Each structure stands twice: as C-alpha cells, then as structure tokens.
Amino acid sequence: MAVLFRMPVVLGLFVGVMVLGLASSAKFDELFQPGWAPDHFIFEGEQLNLKLDNSSGAGFASKSKYLFGKVSMQIKLVEGDSAGTVTAYYMSSDGPNHNEFDFEFLGNTSGEPYLVQTNVYVNGVGNREQRMNLWFDPTKDFHTYSIRWTQRQVVFLVDETPVRVHTNMEHKGIPFPKDQAMGVYSSIWNADDWATQGGLVKTDWSHAPFIASYKGFEIDACEAAVSVSADDNAKKCSSSGEKRFWWDEPTFSELSLHQNHQLLWVRANHLVYDYCSDTARFPVMPVECEHHRH
Image (cartoon, rainbow, N blue to C red; front, side):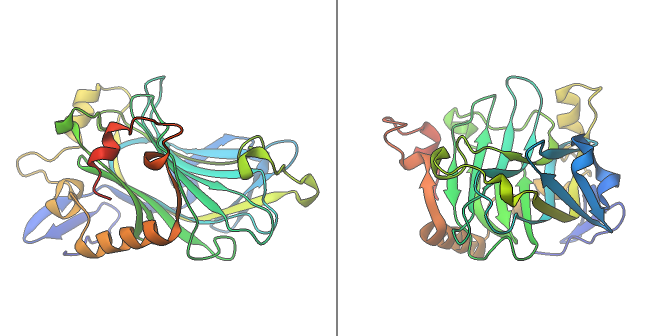
C-alpha cells in the first residue's frame, strides 16, 4: 500500500493516480466544540481533560458532519476506581432513524480491566454490542482509537489494530450506513445503573473527579453540508471520473491479510461478549451474523 501524504489539504498518491482526502490534524477548538458542561473542560496545552463529578459529566461534538473517511483521537482513560463511569467516543447522525458507530469504555474497580464495548446502529436499530478487554492498561498512557468508514465496511481500530469490522452486505438485503452524514462526539458520564457488572457496582463519588484525557485529534473525511440533500452529499463524497477519494480505493475495501490476522488474534484473546453468540437475547441469530466472516 502506498502512503497517503498528509498536508493541510491532503493529496494522496496511489499507483500514479491522484486520490483526494480531506484531512485535518488539528487542535481541539479547530475541529470540536463543547457540547455540554463547558465548566467541566480543563485544557492543559493541547491536552483536553473532561471531568466527571457528582454534579455533571461533560461532552463535546465536532463542528462539522462527515460522510466516509477516518476519525481518530488519543485517549487516556480514568485511572484507579472508575466503576460506574462510561467514556464514550462515537460517530452519529441525527434523528430517530440515525446511524451510529460507538466506542464505550466501561469503568471498573481498581485492579480490574477496562471493558471496551462497540456497537453499530443502522436506521435507528442497535443491539449489536461486542465487548472486549485490551492488551494494555488504557489508564496509564494515551492510545489511539479510530473509526474508518467506507462504502464497503466500518472498521474500529485501537492503535491501528482492527478490533471489529462491520461489512456492507446490502447484496444480502441487510441495510448498511452510507447515506447519513455523521458528527463526531465524546463524553464522560455516570452510568452506574448498567456500566459495571450490570449495575451491581456503583460509582464511588469519594474518588471524584474522574478524568478522561484527550489529544491528537484527527479527521480525514468528507465534510458534508447540512444544507444539501443526502443524495448531493453522497455524490460529493464518492469517487467519480477523475475525482478519487482514498476511502473508495480497493486497498480500503477490505482488511489486508495482516489486519485479518490481527482481528482474529483480538477476537481469540480479548473478546468477552459478542451479540452474535448471545442465544438468550437472540434465539434466532441476527442475519448479518450469519454472513460476517470474522
């Protein structure tokens, strides 16, 4: 795979073909804005700390919405006893029939591993949870969490290692999220009714404030205008003629052999829950589970 060269406006060169990307690698306030509780934002240079205490959590949102591409940020999760807390990082469209790609980091008692829950909503329907632990302590240092969205697949990545793939199977009659522009969001909040051991372990407010830290904000995606139709945004953000976007290149239509091996390793060693295997919730296997290769 050739390299995508990053510039303020990115032009990538793939095998002699000019491929466009619309990349931003920027400070927080160039890409994002506080969504709620701005008094719980603490800036230390280019690092953002979000604070959760017994009065409020906090969250932020991207200034623009996007259709296809890749979003990344470096996050260091709450140290120590984080039971009951959730740090969420996700992409979502608006409305009751929204699409959404979720990372949710579920806190735990001191010494227990963080659980990472991913979920995919399509046309307002979720219930596609997977949970895993990580091969490192996410509270000790920053790690990069990314969502790569093309017309062929959605890939969740941790330090560039794929941990989940949701494949476009429209040819099987299964809807795929590709026609709604999404914002990028993150928040920290109290969810002790379900987050830790199904809600059995509650938040210990004597350990507050709980801090999640962020840096390294990157968005390499097609900015979609809210004032135009979904069809017009789809045309703008899809390759045609000499206009080529990297997310439409065959290189990104599926995982490489190495990435497939990485994903299989993650699933074999770190996956602790997969909705596809939950026969109590789903006596009949969800149809996309029958076709996913992983």
